[in-house]
Length: 157
Image 1 (cartoon, rainbow, N blue to C red):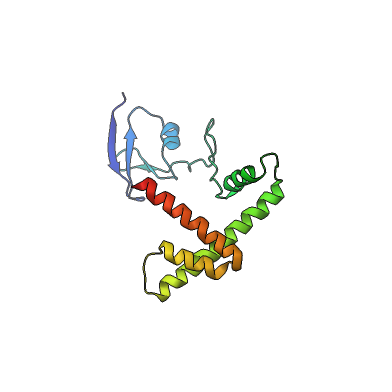
Image 2: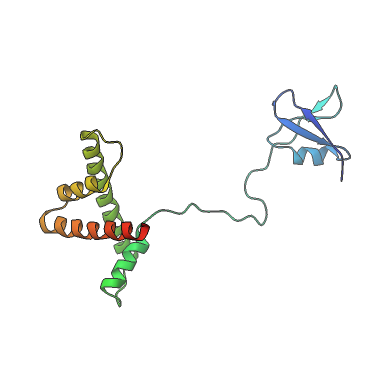
């Protein structure tokens, strides 16, 4: 191992190391963001700016876009096992589910605020479903939601 000497840079204020036995070019490559290299007590040499982009062999990690696609697909297969769905239809369904969720969440939030509650509970969501969805659809949604909450509570206990 090559011995390392810690030193404080006067210009950037960050803690860096000077490795003995390295050439100026090697030290310039190893330092980041163009911070200076200290040669001795009196002299300082400016380093080359840091390289941008990915290193060779490094793969880029994409941020996953959140959607309801897998859940829509599972429900489709439950109802029509032999049927598929195009990308455009899936996009429309995803937008529809997202919009419905936002409407219900907003309504439940308003109910909580009106009742001076800090926590959204099942009752607020159920009431928002009754307010947002029309007639028969609201009744079916409430019964399905009640069934889901009962199943969740029984599995938790």
